[in-house]
View 1 (cartoon, rainbow, N blue to C red):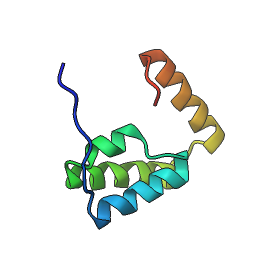
View 2: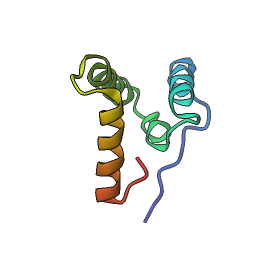
View 3: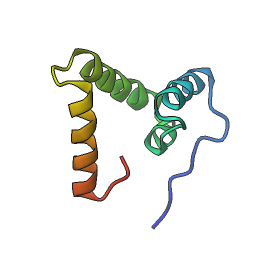
View 4: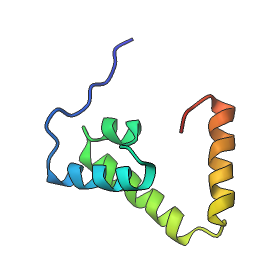
Length: 78
């Protein structure tokens, strides 16, 4: 299977998103590095996740527990 390569020379917008991802997770998440090929996708999903995080009605600790549980169900690191 062919692997998707990372962006070799990210622009200023992508680097800003990388900094946000690194601040939240400690390192830039792999999905974010792969979505950098399509900036509209990166912006759209970033906006969706931010709105869910800021305006969601689930407590942050419960949300984190749900994320871990769903990742375990699907055998994913995220």
